[in-house]
Amino acid sequence: MMKLSYLVLMKVSFVYILTCSDNSYYTGITSNLAKRWEQHQSGYYKECYTYTRRPLKLSFYAEFSDIRIALEWEKKIKKWSRAKKKALIDGDFEALPNLSKKNFKR
Image (cartoon, rainbow, N blue to C red; front, side, top):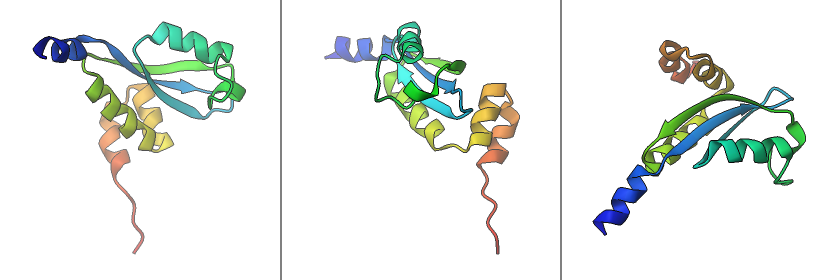
C-alpha cells in the first residue's frame, strides 16, 4: 500500500489554461501535456469545449507531483474570474489576492 501511495504522489500532472480563438479561457488537467495539447488542437474530442474554438494558445501551465493538489488547483482556477485568470497567465501574482476580493454593494 505504501508503494502505491508513493507512486500516486510521484506521477506528474499539469494544470493548464488555453486561450481560445473567441478569447475565452479553458482550464484543464492532464498527465501528458504534449498529448493533450495535440488533442485540443486537432479537435480529437468533438464534444470538448475547445473543439469549435480553435486555434488555441497554451497560455499557462503548472506542474504538480501530487494529482490531488493538481485537482484542487484546477477546480479553484475554474471558479476564478477572467481578470484573475489573466493575472495568473501574465505572471502578475501580486494582483491575485486583490482579484479575490468581492466588491459588495451596500
